[in-house]
Length: 398
Image (cartoon, rainbow, N blue to C red):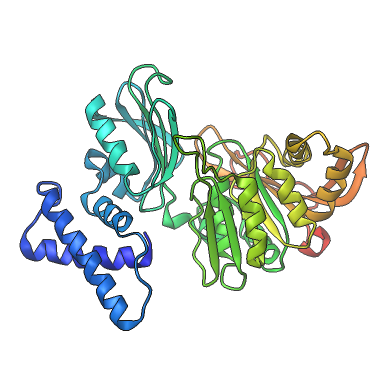
């Protein structure tokens, strides 16, 4: 929630408590109070020469969403131990704690699910319908919402909410949770503060976005960071931060803003670090070109290993057009990437850093040559083990 909206929301909550109004029972009264407080905020801002709320209607929707909550799912959203919530087409509600899935006794009917999704999308400006059967959006608390509707899904709608818990937002916290040893956390902190370009790889639910967010938090106090995402997911705070989000096309098929466009715009914003939330298409070319201008970068990519992540990043730019040659991409990538951090989730649901590799800058038969910086052994009795040679110093990763 933006700063003006948060201020308005606090004032509205105070008035609702004072007047004994429950927004879930009397939403019209809550709307009138919210609308009045938005107008009052703008009147005060105008008198003081401060910035006004640009879109009053959007601010009202955002505040209302934060006040009314999300019905039966709100207790699950408020639970600090639950990291993910999803509803299958049957309406059954499932959750995940510490990487382990469990089915709750809660079940929502079709009407309740559709009403819930509509309320979640109110403040996002995004839609889901027959012409656009999938949608990704961010909830007011920063959680990511994904919806697939009937006609694509058998039965009812499928809803997934991925939360980004505050307890996982620093490298020290991740080390304390057992995701990596403390010396690996120190290595990554040094790399980010020294302006290294780092790729985070792994499978779905391996903790890539959480890892990237924690790494960015380690340098957010000293660097101007510009993030580029399809949907806001990176929960990063800093004194000099710009977050950009793509936009889907309108009903007329116009107005789409792609990641490729956002990467180009981000380079005009004087970034100390350019971040692409997830690279999976032709935007890989724009990222590689940006990194070769000397701008440190960071991103996530789906891959089964750190080596495969580099291989994937040499192939994805070819989607940008026939005039793109791998013989150009591979050397450019080898010269611009410093570290690749690969995350995995084991069968017990535990997430950890499996390996870290560093490109040497050399190319061997079209492939980027790398060296191992760190590798964890298979977990058995110990939390972590290291192959012979252990953790390589950060100076050797250049």
